Length: 239
Image (cartoon, rainbow, N blue to C red; front, top):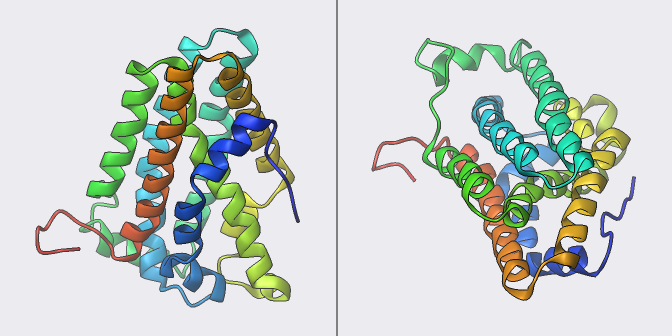
């Protein structure tokens, strides 16, 4: 499945601005092993647990954007994204963590509590998003949350292509297909269109800040997968 999310010159420009980071993401061991179907189940479980924490912060950031949006349709978009879209991802997480392959690792990774602790990268990323949504200009907050939409959709298609005809029996099929789907494409199209319209109306200083926020959040996307792969913790001796 192919799809182009660029809705105009500003969204094309910001996507081009993160080309190097996108290449680094595509080459991450986590995603290469996931595509091959060899990613360790314990590592993937750790990723899902961290993503559970991330989604709470992400939803909070979008809820803040909904409250600050200058137009009703943008308020509706962010509110729905914070509610329905995040709920659906959490439902997918619950199904994965309840499966025999991943479930046994939850107690080990949470010290028997079932409640994960945010890694330094997870805490940093969610704190960044909430801060940008709450304190930066609205346009910059939108730019900060956009990579999570766009990069996941991009990688969904990259992974689908890499898996090819092995998808039917792939151990991470459900996760890949969540992000390579018409429903997710529609959400990304909506978010990119909002970015494009805001960038078109913004002055040079705000537009520059939007590009920088998008770039920083894309780096966080890269670090998030990488930190999950090494099961990053708070011990100073860890990576």
